[in-house]
Image (cartoon, rainbow, N blue to C red; front, side, top):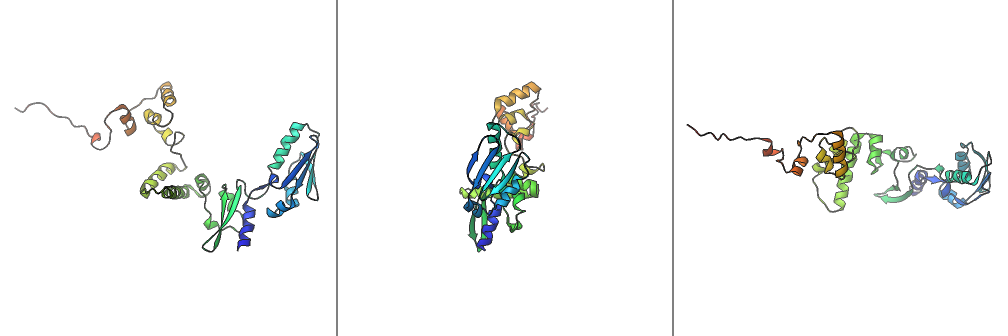
Length: 260
C-alpha cells in the first residue's frame, strides 16, 4: 500500500540532526541548545528518544531533552573554535535512515509502489525491512561489484550502457557493449577505460601517451628507460608503420634472381 511505501521510504531517507533542528544556541564555552521542529520529527518518523540515543555515544558532552529542545553540556570548558567544530559534527550526526540517501520519491508502476532515491547505498538499503530485495536496482556499478560480485557488475554495466545509448536514439550492437564490459571486468574487479585504468596499463609507451596525458607519459617512460617495441596497432599508426594485423602480419619476400 501507499502508506507502507511511505513508511519504508522514511526508513531509507538519511536524516541528520541538521534536518530536524530549526535553531541552535550556544555560549561558545560549555553549552549548546538544539531546538527541534516537531513537524519535521513527525515527517521523518523520528522521536526525541532517537536523537538522544545517537548523541549518547559521544563522551565529550552530556545531553538532556527538555520538550522539543536538547541541551548539550560539554564535559570540559572549551573555546569558541572547538565548540563550533563540535556543533558541526553534531549537526551531521545521522539519526535515522541509510547514509548517502539524500532524497526519496514514490512512484506507482503496474500497481506497485517504487521508491526512487537520490544517492546510492546498495548494501544498507537491502537491510531495510519492507524492501523487496529481488527488485532493488542501482546505477552504481562499484557498489554492485563489491556487494554482489563482478558478474553482477558486468551485467549491470551492459544494461546501463544499453539504456544510455538507447535514450540518445543510438543503436549499437549489444556485442560491442559486452566486449567493453568484459574488458573492464576481466581482471575480477572494475577498471575504467581511462589512463588510471585500462589505457594506463598498456605495455606500449606510445599507446599510453595517445590517451590524455602525452608529454608526462613519454617523459616518465624516458626516465625509466622503457622500450617501445611497436607491436600494437596504435603505436604503429602513430609512427606511420605497417599495422601488424591482417595482411600486415605476413612478410612476403620476392626472389629477384632470374631463372636459368
